[in-house]
Amino acid sequence: MKLISYRKDGKPSFGAVVADQVVDLGKPFPAASNLAALLADPSLLEQAKVYAASASADYAFGDVQLEPVIPSPGKIICVGINYVAHAAEAGRKVGEHPVIFQRFAETLLAHNAPLLRPVVSKEFDFEAELAVVIGKGGAHIAPEDAMAHVAGYTCFNDASVRDWQFHTHQYGMGKTFRSTGALGPWLVTADEIADYRELRVTGVLNGEQMQEGTLSELAFDIPTLISYVSKALTWHPGDILATGTPSGIGFKRNPPIFLKPGDTFEVVISQIGTLSNPVIDEA
Image 1 (cartoon, rainbow, N blue to C red):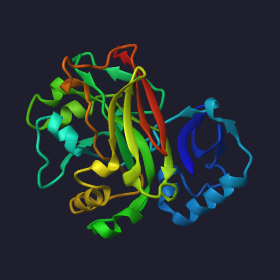
Image 2 (tube, rainbow, N blue to C red; image 1 turned 90 degrees about the vertical axis):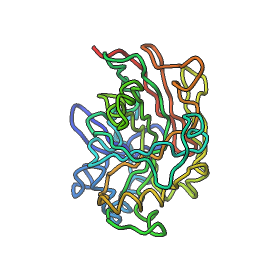
Image 3 (spheres, helix red, strand yellow; image 1 turned 120 degrees about the vertical axis):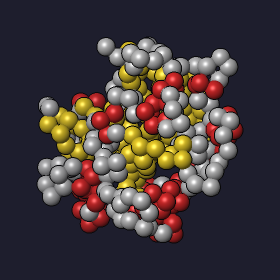
Image 4 (cartoon, rainbow, N blue to C red; image 1 turned 30 degrees about the horizontal axis):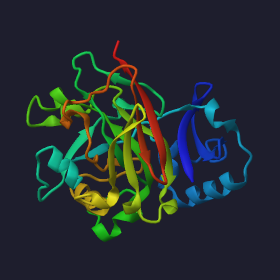
């Protein structure tokens, strides 16, 4: 099932995408205040799947205003240098532990919403990624139990401001500028993905492929990442884990390629869909 968060006539809701239609789930399932709450209740989620399969559509997909799949996640955990080829192009080696940094929820934007190239930099780069959405919370999760905590998957563009990223050895500041973290267009529930390792991530700039990788190439796989983070932080339903980007990023090209106004960047993931965002300058 494909699930979205959206607004209609200014009112927030969530629903299922069936073909090019939207079945609203907010009204028939008032026990869930938002999509994260629905994901947190396996029984309610199963009821929603059955309902969406037979209910009449409420809206055309193009008639709703999409929000980031999870509009206000409690935390967004990002992983750096997690594809071996990307580590090589960055001149880095994969270490004993994953490289973890955080992004703030207020930086997220939806499918088709414009990425903002910041006033303070022209080194605005793209990063196509698979994002994992947590459905079942927990701490100290064993790797062999971790996949039971996954609600589903979506596309993510961890667009980065490179010069700010390297102001200091703590590069998180360049990773959390306003309106730079695109998330969507929808979440595909975990039961629809037989093996996440077969998913292929592609980054496309103005119709030209820039990045490509498969999830089987991760240095630290999804169960390892969920388990590792859970030793320090408790996962909650709706939390986001961004799994890292494959090789082909702009600032490591010769000459470098950075996002500029008028560009469109797409994150294309097999079995998931396409997240597309134009680029504009910050006012």
